Image (cartoon, rainbow, N blue to C red; front, side):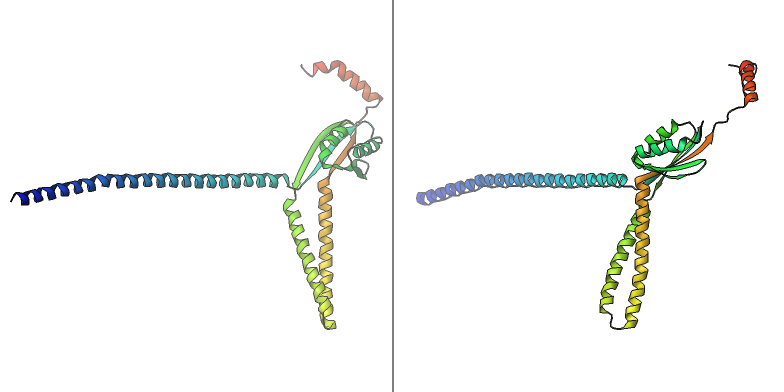
Length: 248
């Protein structure tokens, strides 16, 4: 009987130790799982930060590129500047030669001369300087400087010229392959039309280039009126008694 009791007691002790060992090992497994989760979370956070940095960098580069493009578009505008001056001078005859010198000094030339009008061309970047020099020849009674943005028209002409040149090349290829007189004549007529269009577009672009490079100044001249002998008498009389009419 004692032997049976001893065996039962030993069995209970062994069972208790085995259960304790199982329970004590469980927290270690749980701690391993928690550490892995934190590592994964940190890794994911790092990847997210890198992704956000890359996205921000891409957006910043895009914005900077957009700003540079906008600035480039502004600086590449094609503008024609012209000016009109009304100038009152003492002696008309001496003005044309003086304006010719001014035009030459500002990398330009006189394009036309008449009794009361002189037109000259000067480098666009020297327009203001030329106007100041002309103003010293007399008294400017009115001045107008105008600008005309021809960017869209210029680009349109460039595109049309490019397309016309490509079409002409294709028709030249067709002309080489024409098998009869009728086909040859049709291709030649189209080539003649394209050549005319190409010449017109080239002329237009050349004219645009000239107007962009050189600004035109139209000077309208009037001569100061000199009073005669009697006139000087009245001028002197007015100067002596003008205080009666004008109060300071």
